[in-house]
Image (cartoon, rainbow over all chains, first blue to last red):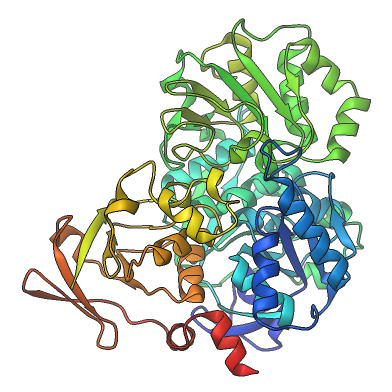
Length: 413
Length: 157
């Protein structure tokens, strides 16, 4: 029978043909535990009475939300994480290397065809390399740490096809925001979003990562791309028959198919305070902005910093406006430092911060107050996420964010 | 019978429990901040046995298990919504709090109304009317019956 990409991936893992709705127990290739959840997961793990972790080498512990700490109690999580890692022999521990979702592929863990679970909802990001990955709670994580497996329902799939060449001011962020607007915040709940078409074939892995990252904002269980030569190059593995076979059948059955022409896409924003409140930038342009945030696991990569630097080179951001730039990882930070990108952004007046989640999760520097407006490249504009519940958060691409920083009002790139 | 606390669609986990409270050492210390940005008096007013009734996509957003945990700690007996975000749904079952899908209830009731839930038969009684609600898949019902994932895993041992 014909199958979607996610059905093939799960079928390979459990060694039998699977269909949407089947409840299967899958073996887990990777577990990601972040600093917010590690103390809770560790406590639940001990409460469950496990003597050891099923395979400590498949567990990755990453500190990112509290880097560097901003409140007196934050470092308690690091101490709890260190104690857990020492006690159970975890070797894959990243204490200052960057955001978990960047590191899980960048540092060479997750590969095409793998199954990964993480204690953070944006674990969907690893779908960019053709893996199945999704977020879970800490009790469930404790269960996997002890058993190495998890039960799940094989999801139905929504096929998203984008063909053609994107206009120069439109990025993969605009594409995924548009898709979320069309699906709504719950339109893909429990389902797999499967991206394809010539536009995504031509995208960099970094751009695909942005789309997989935000799949969860439409409620999706995962957002997945079939692996290609570029994927394997990024993952440092040969492109073999195994990866080539990991693609959907042409006559697979989908719950829904969305088709887009890239040339019709325009820069868009998610307006306050829902991710599916999508409007063309041209409709909200002119709105005065207090701060711009360029960073996060959605858009804190080298190509995102390059896009901003191209706009801000030899220019200066608007007076009164603050621009915060937070590279997604130390590797990206160093690359951007070496090629002059950070210098350009700094010359333009941006505040460059240490790699990590930063302002995205409302813990880093840059917290705002009532009625302030922020244009941000991250993935959520929920009430109260970056300060008080009256802060207005607009989500946009790095290009729109940089143009806005330049003018001080929302501006199309 | 328990009272209904009513919420609209797309209630996210930041609204249920904001990130600045996630690191409080215990759920007991967090729970007074439940729904703070939506209904600052919720934690004070809710009583054990009450229900949260919501529109579509309840619990969207982050994977924080603290969201269903604070509701359970405040004594919320169940959340009944038109639909749930998947991580919130799994987390609720894993901590032993029923999450029930009813397409009709939200539009038919008002905040403060009283209701009764019959989990076994999949029915809700409110305002003299009976509404049907979805029963859980067996795998989830088993976990819930045993009082959550920890109790369930301990039992397997």
